[in-house]
Length: 448
Image (cartoon, rainbow, N blue to C red; front, side, top):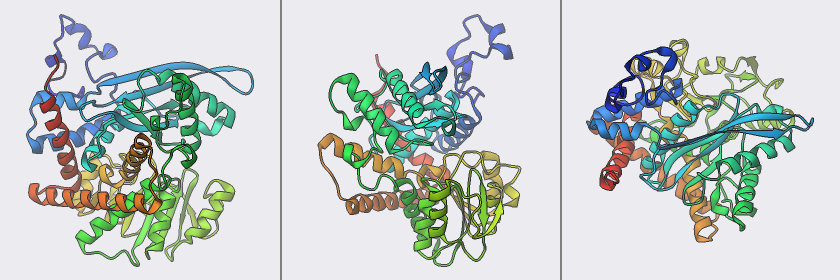
């Protein structure tokens, strides 16, 4: 595997007589350079391990590592002050083999082509593992949403939607909420797209309010899916959740739901964190009080129910179950040996680097991979899309029951594959997903 993201790399594509240019670091133009990033390196490392286990040929590997389509846009937006500011947005579609693409829309200062390419690839594997009829995509706008007013946020969402219009659609690419976006932003996106085509298109986006065609249960889907997933793996391990100490990095749309649901099942939440810092209490935090504090103050900072620590310190809190539910690259070679847990549940995308994972495996710490642990969101997004297409509305109980059944089935398949291949849960999950996409790619052949 070459370092540009495809087996054989530049050699497979041909240099065309530009050898000297291609060998110059200042003019890296080989395939894969455009979206190269640390997150893409992690995604590629995980794919490569599964591809090696499956014995995939070079052509299939190359087709499944490089994004099929990508859009980068720069657009002006009026700030409330009257000034005009330029923003950069992205939309990356990893593969079109499985059906329309599906993926979130995030607003954050670190949004980039490489980040979106990695997240789009992961979304492909999530959908394939859960048996959803989608390829993966990802998009967003590079900005600091905390420094945008509500009016400015709306203008950015609507302008980004207009710029992405050629790529998105209910049968082409369906966005969803992600970092710093939610029901409000999805409503603006749906309205902007609908204005362009001249009629309402609820199926253009998922994660909408129920009044606009959203589904019951979508708001808590990612966190609830992680809990169902954890319960499935604990059953395989013969563990009880009652009394287990849990530390959660992240107390937003995902982490807060996980904390609430695990506390209701008898777990002891000993640490939580958000972007402003963390709170630790080995006797157990009152999750209801935490939620009320955040509702009133936006951040955990100032909560008096435990010891204040840094948000990264929460990862090192003594516990049985550690749940990174915030950002990527949180468990690294620098801090992995200070972790004091027995099981990690990756509710965030890519929180563990490959180098750290190798240490965790050596230490006997098991990992419930993000590929499955945070797939609840896209699974319920599929339910919402299906309801919109069919003009149906499912009850919350039906959505929850379907999600539990689908997550538990995926857990069983991953555990069975891991035993068959004598490998870890992450490689097993990727192997199942990659095999399904590779088989579909082979059946569709190459056009023309």
